[in-house]
Length: 69
Image (cartoon, rainbow, N blue to C red; front, side, top):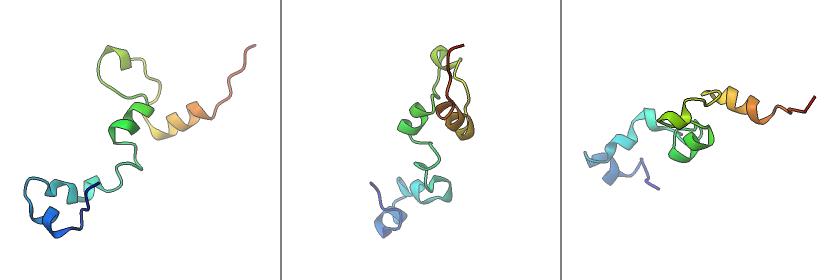
Protein backbone atom coordinates (compact mmCIF):
# COMPACT_ATOMS: atom_id res chain seq x y z
CA UNK A 1 0.00 0.00 0.00
CA UNK A 2 1.29 3.45 -0.91
CA UNK A 3 0.79 6.41 1.42
CA UNK A 4 -0.30 9.32 -0.83
CA UNK A 5 0.37 11.88 1.91
CA UNK A 6 4.05 10.92 2.24
CA UNK A 7 6.46 13.62 1.06
CA UNK A 8 8.65 11.18 -0.87
CA UNK A 9 5.64 9.96 -2.85
CA UNK A 10 4.38 13.50 -3.51
CA UNK A 11 7.78 14.71 -4.74
CA UNK A 12 8.58 11.74 -7.00
CA UNK A 13 7.31 12.57 -10.52
CA UNK A 14 7.10 8.89 -11.49
CA UNK A 15 4.63 7.87 -8.78
CA UNK A 16 2.91 11.08 -7.69
CA UNK A 17 0.01 10.32 -10.07
CA UNK A 18 -1.46 8.36 -7.18
CA UNK A 19 -1.89 11.61 -5.22
CA UNK A 20 -4.49 12.99 -7.68
CA UNK A 21 -8.09 13.27 -6.52
CA UNK A 22 -9.21 10.92 -9.29
CA UNK A 23 -7.60 7.99 -7.49
CA UNK A 24 -9.31 8.52 -4.13
CA UNK A 25 -11.12 5.40 -2.91
CA UNK A 26 -10.80 3.41 -6.11
CA UNK A 27 -11.53 0.29 -4.06
CA UNK A 28 -14.91 1.65 -2.93
CA UNK A 29 -15.93 2.47 -6.49
CA UNK A 30 -14.97 -0.96 -7.82
CA UNK A 31 -12.19 0.31 -10.08
CA UNK A 32 -9.42 -2.06 -8.98
CA UNK A 33 -8.74 -5.23 -10.94
CA UNK A 34 -10.47 -7.34 -8.28
CA UNK A 35 -13.44 -4.97 -8.21
CA UNK A 36 -13.84 -4.97 -11.97
CA UNK A 37 -13.74 -8.75 -12.14
CA UNK A 38 -16.37 -9.05 -9.40
CA UNK A 39 -18.59 -6.64 -11.35
CA UNK A 40 -18.20 -8.88 -14.40
CA UNK A 41 -16.43 -6.28 -16.51
CA UNK A 42 -13.59 -7.07 -18.87
CA UNK A 43 -12.35 -6.88 -22.43
CA UNK A 44 -12.96 -9.22 -25.30
CA UNK A 45 -15.69 -11.51 -26.57
CA UNK A 46 -16.17 -13.28 -23.23
CA UNK A 47 -17.50 -10.13 -21.60
CA UNK A 48 -19.78 -8.94 -24.40
CA UNK A 49 -22.81 -10.56 -22.73
CA UNK A 50 -22.17 -9.11 -19.27
CA UNK A 51 -25.46 -7.97 -17.80
CA UNK A 52 -25.13 -4.57 -16.15
CA UNK A 53 -22.02 -2.47 -15.97
CA UNK A 54 -23.22 -0.27 -13.13
CA UNK A 55 -22.99 -0.73 -9.39
CA UNK A 56 -26.77 -0.56 -9.12
CA UNK A 57 -27.22 -3.30 -11.71
CA UNK A 58 -24.62 -5.47 -9.96
CA UNK A 59 -26.40 -4.99 -6.62
CA UNK A 60 -29.77 -5.79 -8.17
CA UNK A 61 -28.40 -8.90 -9.86
CA UNK A 62 -27.06 -10.25 -6.55
CA UNK A 63 -30.14 -9.37 -4.51
CA UNK A 64 -32.85 -10.70 -6.81
CA UNK A 65 -34.24 -14.15 -6.13
CA UNK A 66 -35.01 -16.08 -9.29
CA UNK A 67 -37.29 -19.08 -8.84
CA UNK A 68 -38.35 -21.68 -11.37
CA UNK A 69 -41.92 -21.55 -12.61
